[in-house]
Length: 312
Ligand code: BDR
Ligand code: CA
Image (tube, rainbow, N blue to C red; front, side, top):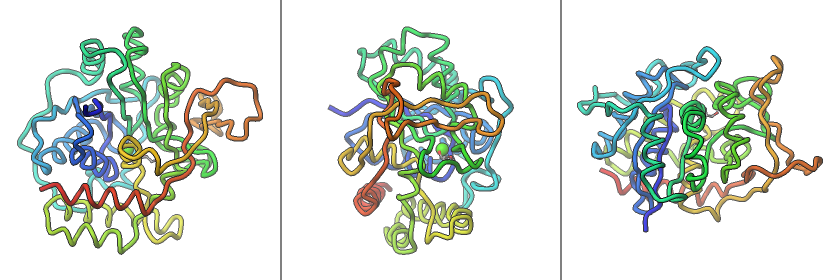
């Protein structure tokens, strides 16, 4: 039976690749895509999710717009990474399909209540505002969640938006803190992993060679997206952060990590949004997350390439 998932996202080129990977995977049943403000404002993340579902000819998957701003803070965006649209690179068509009228938070609450307990995996790929809002408003849904597999945080890589914080956690640290304290079965895919899932010219070329609209779209998005990190880190390509979440659902064995305690810094101005991860077990604090540390990047790209090639 296919694994039921809700993708909560702020597309974002790497979010878009993650959505396409999920859409191409028969092992997954996407119940809906919920959008949140993050890489770009909510109106654009929602539009981008519609562009991606239309590109894959999957308008049957509902797109639900969620929170416009973090729980307690002004929104911080990342156009300097993703471009003004959030999906710079390919030519973007105005989507014909419309978002669903229901708010993303209502969709998450109702879907968890209507389905069997522990049958739905939440896949957050952006700031955790929607999920935290749903947990705050309807605490009864927390124990109905099967698992959360999220992209966020860092230990060895420390930070990308500040010296000590990763973007998704930094944008809404209070929301992240709520999730990490919620006792949900939690898998965290931090920068430590995603910085090993790097594009290379040869890997991008394979997407071009598919001669499909989705292959070309992925190639053009990633070619744009990588310019920032190549310059910043001096690497050959850029990390495909968010597709790691979907790849983990499909092939968990290509990842490895440790169950550890992770807490989120919500007060310090200097280290706001830091994932304080007890990787070396120096405290007695209870483990609350499987913190992934490594990925076999060749197997990750093999999977991604094979799946994207199956799309229109
Ligand atoms: C995360 O931040 C965003 O820019 C990416 O989409 C990813 O979810 C990486 O820090
Ligand atoms: Ca994202």
